Structures are given as C-alpha cells and as structure tokens.
View 1 (cartoon, one colour):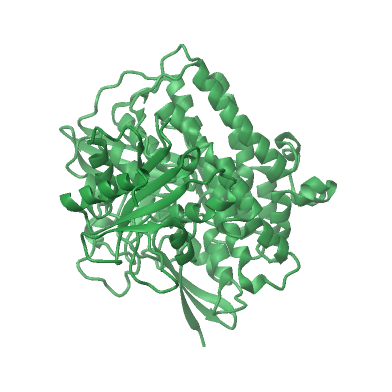
View 2 (cartoon, chains in turn orange, red):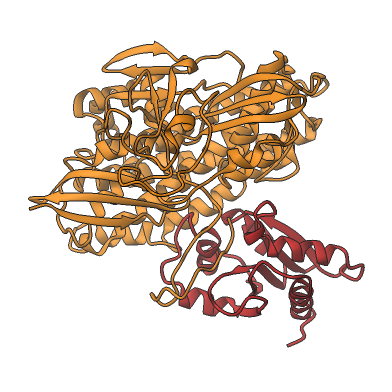
Length: 497
Length: 142
C-alpha cells in the first residue's frame, strides 16, 4: 500500500511542498505544490511602461539582475532598440557574476547540507562530510560564503548596488565605468578564479577542460591528491557513494535560453537527443492543475493572464502554472544548458549513466569554468572610452519579450504596452518550468517525473527526495519566510530576503 | 569613520513587509544620524555580510510576525536568535543563516549585534519608536 509523505522544502526560495507516494520503498508518484500566490504580474498592470525595470527585480533576491535584464530586453524588443556594445558586455558580465555566486552557494550551502542528514551518520565519509558541509560552519560552507561575498561587488561597481539594482535600461546601462572600475572587476574575478581553481577544482580551469568524458573524469580524480581532496573530488565521491548518480532523471526534454543576452539570439531545445533552435512562440502555459482560471490564464505568455481561482478546485494543487514547450514538460537549468551546448563531459555522463541528481549538480559545479573565462573575455573587450548607452526612446505601444539564461535556467518576460502603460505582463521563471504541476494532458512536471522511481530508505526521513528536488536549484519566490522557534511554531518572523 | 550600523531590511513594495524600510526612511529624515551608517538592506540576506565588518555595533531592523500584538517593537539579542532558531537555512532564511554563520567567518572583532523586530505593518508612532530604539542601541543606551 502506498504511503503518502508531505515534505516542506525549506531550503528553496519561498514556499514549496513536495508530496510523494511511496510504495515498497520507492516513490511511485509525486506532486510539486507551489503554496504561495505570487501575483507580480497583476501588480504591474496599469503601471508606467518602465516600472517593470524596478518591480520585477524584486521577484528574487538572488536573480534580481536576471529579472532586470529580461525586463529591459522585453522593452527593447518592442522598439527594436540596439544596445551599445559596451552596455551589452557589462550586462553579460553582471549576469555572469550572478551565476557564479548562485552556482557555488547552491551546491555547498543548500544541496550539500542534505548529505549531513543523520541517516548517513554510519557512512565512512560522514565525519569528513560534517567537517566540510555542516550548516553555518563547515569548511566548504565558510569558504563559499567568503568567496562569493565579493562577486556581487562587480555588479555593484556597474550598477551602484546589488541586489535590486536598476542600472540596466533600454539601450544599455546607466553608468560609465572607467578603467579603474574595470581593473577592480578584473581583480575581483581573479580572486574568485584563484579560489575556484585551488579549492573547488584542485587544478587549473585549463587542466580540467581536458576532462571530456567519464573515464577521463575517473582518471582525473585519481591523478593527484589535490584532485581527490578538492571540493569537486570529494563531492563526486560522496554523490557516487550515496547513489546520487542513479536517481533524479526526468523527461528527456531540455530547454535553455540564449547564453549571451542579445536580442534574437537563440537558446535550444533538446528532446530525445534531437537538438532544435529555441522558438519562444512554442511556449504555452497550462493551468488544468494550477489554481488559475482556465479560460483566461492559459495560452502563450503574451496572452495568458494571471487570474487566481475564486475557490480551490480539487485538481488544482499548485500556484505554479505548467509551462510547456512544444507541448512538452521541459527541464531547464545548468544541466540543460550544458547538454544543449554539447559540453563533452556532461554529455558523456548523461549518455553513459543517464540524467541524475549528480549530473545536474555536477553541471552546476563546473559551469563557473566557462562563466569565468567568458567574463574575463568580456571585460577585456570593453573599451571604456566608448559609450555604454545607446539613446533609446521610452516605448509606449506594442508587445515584446525578453529571454535569457538566468542562473537557474530559462527566464522570460512578456510585456504589452498601450499609451505608455502596461496592459499585460507575464513572467515565466526557471522554477516554473522545473517545479510545474501536471499539465492539460496530466503529464507530470520535470521534478515530479524525476522523483518517480526514487528509492527511499526511510519514509520518515526521505532525504533522497531532497537530493532530487534540490538538484534542480529551485526558486519559488522571496518575500515571506517562516521559521519555527525552538521547534515550536509560534508564528512567522520575517527576516531578510 | 562611522563604526555603528543600522541595517533596515524589508520589501518596500509589500506593505506587510515594509516596516524595516519605513524605519530606514525615518532615520534618514533625522539630521542627527551622522554618527551612524544607515543601510537600506532591502531583501538582502547573505549579501549583507560586508556590513558586519569594521564596525562596533550592528542593529538589524525588520518585521516580525506572530510574536506579540501589532504595534509592538521588540529587541532581540543575536545570541538568543541564533540559539532559538535551530533550523535556519539557505536561502529561505538567508539572513538567519548569515547570523548563525557569523562566528565562523573570521570577522575580528565581531560587532555587537541585535535585532529590532516590529510586529504589524508599522504605524507612524511604531516606526518612530523602532527608530528611537535602534539609535539608543548604537549610542550605547541600555
């Protein structure tokens, strides 16, 4: 007989519950329940055309630059505005900084925390796991906090503050960074690279770039003690010992946005091994199992509105809609990005061992190799005497969209303006893709599908569910956060993000 | 150099989470705040870490829910907050995570830290009281 377990996910951004049915020690079904209504889109209607630049970055305290950039691109799309080359480079650098911080913090502060579960206490690696990953004080945790503390300074140099900057506007950016500013950015980046190479990889990025398949990865791990004991080396050994390379495979459909934030640049869609160019027209939001009115809240995001149901219907179990690409539930994020980019190591890993929680987190842990190189290149390409802003008028009428590859995956904004005011606004975040509920055909969302088949050793403490769900690096919303005091729920204390 | 900081956190766009930002505005309107750095922490969590360096006292001002009657302004000590919340985690309680991590981050000397919690959305008098309390703390008034 199936046993149903509800599991509040308290290390995702906001409120999320996972419901799993466990039968004979294996997850037989799963439901992702977004338990909070967001309503940012509704808040924007009737506001000035530029207000999305200020309001949407508040959707997330981690990805605020991503939202700002996407909002600006949606406005540029309406008027076919050209962005100054320098402005474009700075935007990409800022987005890269946000990715660097997110990737490392997610791995060592959130994902790895599950490895410290008491259920693993008898494992031979457990003492070392605690030394490295214990919340608040593990060596990897502390090192990550300190290393990622400085990376947002790059955004602050360009944008005056982080998070929730407002320096990206249609046509470019509002600041005029000089050579000293760029030098400071290069210094911050080189410090981060030094830490990433010495502590995370245990070798140079150039050396690791030679690892192109699983066999070479195994060889690399045994090649030198520095590799074996590096954060990457230890993380790999843990994940393999705990079987994280055998759980968490989802639908074989992957979606990725354009890596560089340029209008009309394309991402990709990889389905059953076939790679196609990404076309935003193929996105549809479905709400059969979401708590929205079906007649006006479903369809392409340029038309689908946000109207919550007056009363909760039985089948509607999530405040997340179900976005589908070409009708398919699609995973987005670091793994999708690596597969669509045809990264040799990640592609080989998935081809030989299948998609898994390990593949997903490994793709994220290795993404800084590429991000760092690109950011260094973009910094070199900036000519500080050139303009960072291409004059652009304020759009008043029309429809547009912005799409980027944010830290957690494909992020899209769709906007429609009339007489200088917002008529319609729709945002699809990466987590809406990954944590979507079932769709109109009752097909599970990517995480729901990834959970099915997961073996659970202890239904009272289904830590394996946490491994799979958190491997997607979720972000629901950042506004209300609940904690309990002395393990008793006295109420809610809102602190921070 | 200003060696005391008052960090006001909250979401200016959400009335139910804006009390900290209202206190920020109140403090900025007072001309005698030159001895202390007033910070709009917005929705910042872990990224408020730099503000704990090179200072003697940090006062965090934020909304609290479910502790007392609306209109209450309470002072919570950092040590109590860290002891009480066993399950602070990243990033859904990112600022809590930061508070619990501070002793391990090598910050020397660690500033005196306390928290001003405001129950309810914050009426005018409540906001002024919270601002007064924050200033009293950085002035060393018990």
